[in-house]
Length: 280
Ligand code: PLP
Image (cartoon, rainbow, N blue to C red; front, side, top):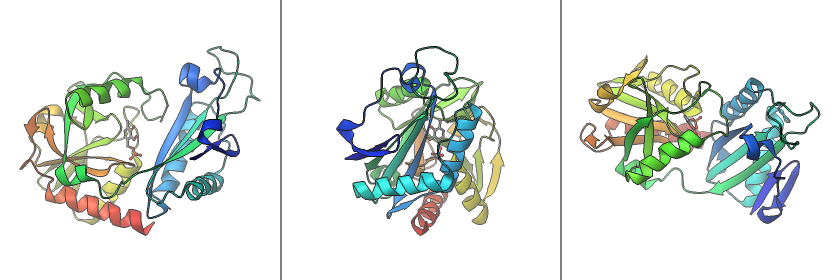
């Protein structure tokens, strides 16, 4: 397995990062994940743009322009022979003596990428439908930044695993913010509902594409808060992410959603998304 670290393509075992890396000490870094389907990167321009935006928000210099990122991603995919799966990118504020404040301006960011080969399109969970539980949203106030500080999401996902379900939907003031690693949606009749973008959640790249596809499919769209009580009464529900695409939800907190099987509009949106993903 070959990974990328600071300008080099290296065997996994040879890619080492010093203990003083600020990603390790402070979770002072940004990441992105793009899916690979049929040998192509999915929605990648938007992921690379969000990486640039996240880095800018916390004052880390983006070491590469968009074309260079894509060239590096593509080379890593081909070196690993990955045609379906994920590519992970991470940039931290670099290696420096431990101090909360930023290190000297000439400190080089640490840049790392790896690929994971896995089946993302023919996912059995998408056929069966996922179950989710709601958990308290314990995160900070800048969730629009895709930071590697993911402890609250780690704890949320572990609660889901311990409940025997696939995802945790995080709740603040009685409304769903988002999944631990996904954007939450419900459908009522022919209306797709999801939370509006703000600093309270990550601007999902898959979210944006799915909203566009929903509009093209003549579904109504409401971007507003979703109270948990309303989600439990939804006719359909689903979540989106680069790795899950459009994942049907059949149960929330033990309550069956719709008929307890993936809903027809959700299935349609998944197919439409897979079509554009395959088309590149
Ligand atoms: N929200 C959170 C908290 C996430 O971690 C993710 C993805 O990892 C998403 C939403 C979905 O975003 P995207 O569709 O860009 O993968």
